Length: 111
Length: 111
DNA sequence: CTTGAACATGCCTTGACAAGTATATTCCCC
DNA sequence: GGGGAATATACTTGTCAAGGCATGTTCAAG
Image (tube, rainbow over all chains, first blue to last red; front, side):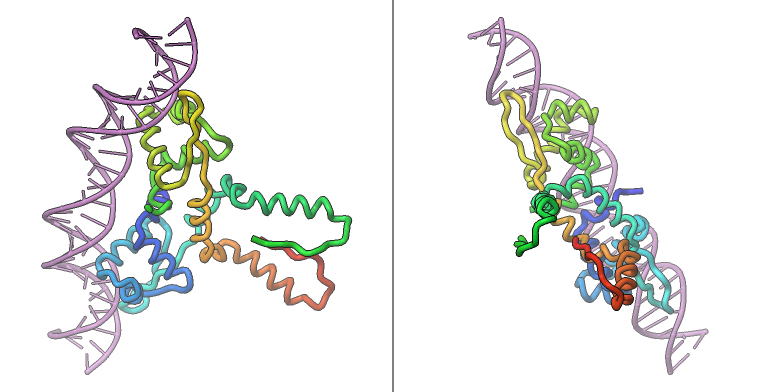
């Protein structure tokens, strides 16, 4: 199966997923929010579905789409080896706090 | 600038980044580890550099490449709205602990 | 200053994919 | 059961990017 990165290379598909993040939506709702033609929405949804990023259920003549988490999880895991790059100072802070753990605590600064 | 997702749609580029996650590497080192022709490596590195995903420094006749974190950070942030999908059970655990809040509390976790 | 190593760039071909347009399918409602 | 909404699919076309190959550039060493 195609990598989730390849699927999400398309801006419209990321937009669709972001809209679905809050709740499931019908094709028509996605269409009006994104302001792109309906066949495009359907085609993007097809790609997303075949990649396992969304799933649909039937509601009369409409289809309601919702997010499937697993491929996004894999991206999250792929990022793991890099995460220390931007949490390094936090790590350092935590080690620092650990080291002065016996002493009484003062204020800490963030970001 | 192109989205980092589009850049990472290419498997070889993800492989390069993964190799650079541990330490900076020269083009030749990347070439022999990935077993793809040198011009391909250079071209992928160019794309990665122009997208801000890596940067290079000169060491005599070699160029050493290393990861730049910021675009990866943005992907990490893009994932944020979805993260509750796979941490839901943790959330449930936390709510559970909150519900038995009358009992004495210990430490809380951040992140 | 010549040779060779390390890397970058240019050109060409080929394949993939998104957009647009038209048409097909499914199902509700009258 | 016929019409129209909601959605899917088919087909065509243009664009763009990756791969392959050849060549250019820079530098170190002798």
